[in-house]
Image 1 (tube, helix red, strand yellow):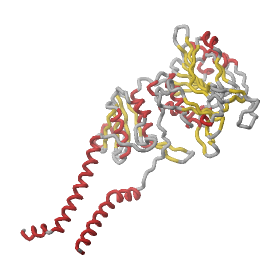
Image 2: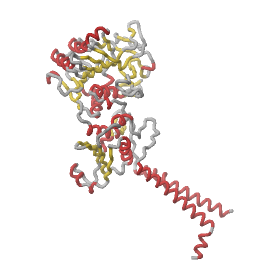
Image 3: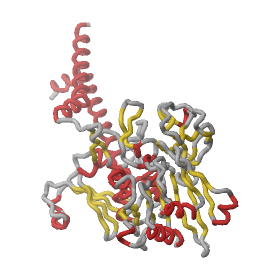
Length: 482
């Protein structure tokens, strides 16, 4: 025993023992801090430019004041650290949201039987009261067939699922069909996004139904290729006279189609749409020096609900909204607010055979032209029929637009075009709490291989240990040489 003590007392062994003890203490502190942070569920610090790893302002707007209790159940998802961390952010956002992690499904035969699951299956269940919705891992990603990239939509999927189970009643949004220049396929993406905001989408052919359904909360009318019938005109006027809400996406009538019946509907609201297209001259309000791509800031007091949102629309070959004079509007009981307009240097072109992008003597000045407006008709009973009109429909479609001959992008994904359409629907369906700028989900998801994972682990854990051991050995060798 004395001999052992004498050995311990040797300075080199004592120093080595203290060094090893210090390393053990450092590792203990490291793992202790990580364990504590995980238990405390502290909010992460996101240094990415687009705040990819943070709850977006959009979700905070929609769920910040949520009063119903919501439970998120994660089944067999313990290996998906990012998903676990991200769902915990919802609990930080609102105390009514809780997360339950179930890694052993055999302990919950009730869940296995309810959803017909195997013990190894993975699932996300979001429930509130008697209502629930189910997400698989495949629902957290989409695929861009233009860039061939996988896109992470985890936040969008979870947030919309929470809205789905907590909303009292979904608004019903109808798209008028029968005489449209664009068929439904052109609005597929924007319809998907409207549906994702807990709305119900349906097509409406007045020649089939005979009237606008009573459950119509918002009627969307897009560019016509021919006039309405007299019956359709009368049904739309009747809908308006009952206080109906209309979203009109109407391109300039560059083909000169005669639409007297449709014009009678517009006459009720005191405006018409030009037959020419607007061209911008202000470089700060056009895309890549293309005058026909006009950028305008949306009135933040209506469709933004937040003065700091800075939401922009980009219209393409837009027409001009022409309102009647004040006296005529007053006689109609109509008031309007401008949502978007051109700069004071824009011009209107009616001769589309002109190839130059600069103003010619055949063009007319059209500074501060209105391209988007909220129009309200005060009815005899004091209620209001409202219409949000944009003198453009292309901006809301999923047409692929060549940007400066460099790359293609969906028209509804330029600027905040998608948000403009969705927020317009939200306003008309009286869901202003969902008016926001949504997170850009065009971020590519990257999954490491097993080999890459092992390399990362080695770099994080093994390499530091090797460096420490080499340091100790070198120190001992140098010490003995002295």
